[in-house]
Amino acid sequence: MSSLTRTLPASWFCNPAMYQLERRAVFFKSWHFLGPVTRFQDRSSPVVYEIAQVILIVENLSEASEDINTDGIVVRSKDNSVSIRSHITPSGLVFATLSLDTPPFSEFFKGLEELTNKVDFTKLPHRRSISYEGRFNWKTMIDGFQECLHCQYTHPTFSKFYPPTFYSVQNHSNFSEHVVDPTKDSDGLFLYFYPICTLNVYGGGMSSFRSLPSTNPGVTRMEFDYYHSGTEEEFEEYFKFVRQVAMEDFELCEVAQANMERGIYGQGILNPEKERGVAFYQQQVRKAVRAQFEKEKALRLPEGLAKTKPLSHRCYKQPQLVA
Ligand SMILES: [Fe+2]
Image (cartoon, rainbow, N blue to C red; front, side, top):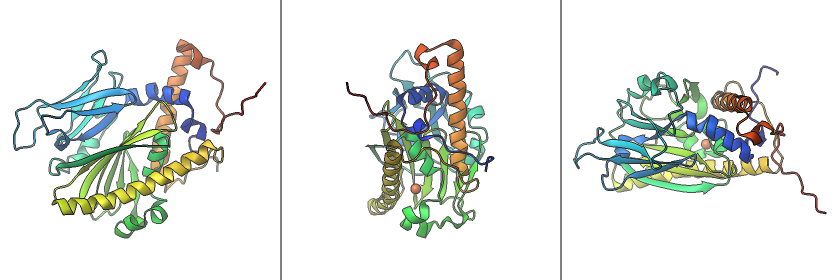
C-alpha cells in the first residue's frame, strides 16, 4: 500500500495561502492553451482571457479575409509591465504564458506537436463560448477530467456512445492524452494541458474548457469554447449533448468540494491504473508547490509564508473562540 500514490490533501483545495503559492509555482511557470486559430478570426472583437488574475488579450491584426488567418494573431498582456510568450503550433493551436518564467514551449510540452500535427485544427469554426462560476477548487474539476472511473454512473448518455471499456490515459510532458477507442483517430480524443486547459474532440464537434482559479480557492470560473462545422440544428444537437456531460461533472465537483470543506474527506489513495491521469497532474502540482515553498523559505520571501505552520490535511475551519 505504501507505494500507492496519495491524493493531494483536502487542505490544498481550500487554503487561500496555498492558492497564492500555486499561482507563483504553477500558473506563472506554465504554458496555457487559449484556443485553435479559428477562435481568433473576428478582427473586430479581441478575445480576452483572465488566468490567475493576469489578463491576456488576443487580437487578429491581419486584413479581413475568407481564409483562416494565423499570421495576424497576436497575444499580449493587458498590463504593459507584464511580459509574456506565445506560440502557435503548425496544426493551429494557440498557447501563451503569464510571465517569462517558463521553459520554452518545445521543452514544456515535449512531443505535443508530433501528436497534434496529425489533426488539422483549422477545420472547425468557432460557434459559441460560455462562462460561469462553480463552487469548487480549480483542481476539483481537473481531478474529474483526468479519470473516467466516474463516467459510467455520472455520464450515462456519454457512456452509451463512448463505453469506458477501452478508456485509457497516457501521460506525457505536461499533457495527457485520453483515448476512448483506439480504432477512431478523430472521435473521442481528449487532451489535458497542465495545469488548467483541455481540448476535446467528440460528438461530432470540438470543445475546450479552462478551469480558472480565483483568489477564493473554493470558487472557479469555468470557460467553454465550442467548435462545429454543421448546420445550426446539428450544432445545437451537439451542444446539448456536450452540455449535458459538462453539467453532470459540475454537480459532481460542487458536491466533492462541499465534502472537503465540511471535513468529510481529508486524503485518499489513487487507483494506479484508472486514476493515473490524476496521479500525474497532482504530482506535478505537488512537486512545483513544494519547490516554490522551499525556494521562498530560503529567500525568506515573502516573510509570512516562511513562518506558515504545516497545514492540516482537512479543510474545515477551526471554530472561533468568543470571549
Ligand atoms: Fe466527467
